[in-house]
Amino acid sequence: MAFTAKDVQALREKTGCGMMDCKKALVECDGDMDKAVDYLREKGLASQQKKAGRIAAEGTVYTCVKNGVGAVVEINAETDFVAGSDAFKELAAKIAGVVIDQNPADLDALLECKEDGKTVSEMVQDLFLVVRENIKVRRFARYEGVVSTYIHGGGRIGVMVKFDTTDEIANSAEFQAAAKDVAMQVAAANPLFLNKESVDPEVVEHEKKILTEQVINEGKPAQIAEKIVMGKMAKYYKENCLVDQIFVKDNDLTVQKYIDGVAKQLGGTVAIVGFERFEKGEGLQKREDNFADEVASMVK
Image 1 (tube, rainbow, N blue to C red):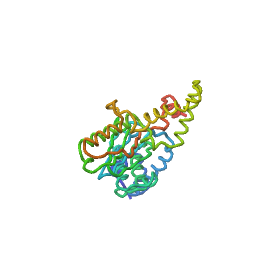
Image 2 (tube, rainbow, N blue to C red; image 1 turned 90 degrees about the vertical axis):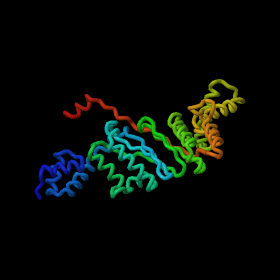
Image 3 (cartoon, rainbow, N blue to C red; image 1 turned 120 degrees about the vertical axis):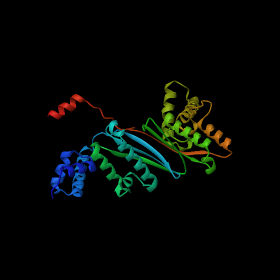
Image 4 (cartoon, rainbow, N blue to C red; image 1 turned 135 degrees about the horizontal axis):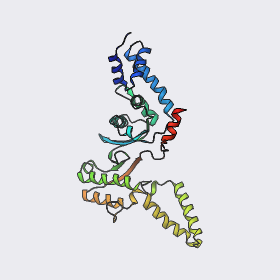
């Protein structure tokens, strides 16, 4: 089947692949446009697998709330140039919508979820064909109920907080402002736990062991070491548990006292029951570009 330059251009617009790749695909597929698209996707998949080991620590964190359900997702790319593109942001938004609507059990299930006839994995592949960078859906979280979200730094940090309160209070402007304040607190202060009760007992014992050794090494008498350690643990909870942290917008209050005050003002009760904080690329190795090495590798 013959094809024209317009066919090559049409295939390029449909897939985002280079002109020569599109021409080769049409040659291989006897001018059949649909087969050529599949051919390029197959080639793209092979290419993506080849690039899958490349570091993808840039990207974005995206949050949204719809019909009483909230989601936060992290999508990674290799460069901030790609991560800042409209296409990348649209992918993140679409995937967050899938999380809300389909409630996948885990990351593997999310990648197999379908939207508009394509799986999330295929959506990622489609964007890869355009940008030619390793793209990964790293993680997600989902809450149902009264949820507030906050994005900091254009997608560098994303926070989602779940509350327990009445619909009447949840719909009030005062509560929504307070909920946003709590989400901003999580972004700024980076608590590790919700409250003292949610700290893993193994973590508590580990901290106590370290603090006890510190106290003994400081030469403190053994009979008062336990009291000193208890005081240090109280400080640990205050620094690392959200409800016990000093409220960043009013240092005379803890977060719990701030929320209690809002609840009293609104004539009901409000409880913080959970939160998620994603920071883009946290825990991932960052890519280090060395232009000289890159040029040297190209001429080998």
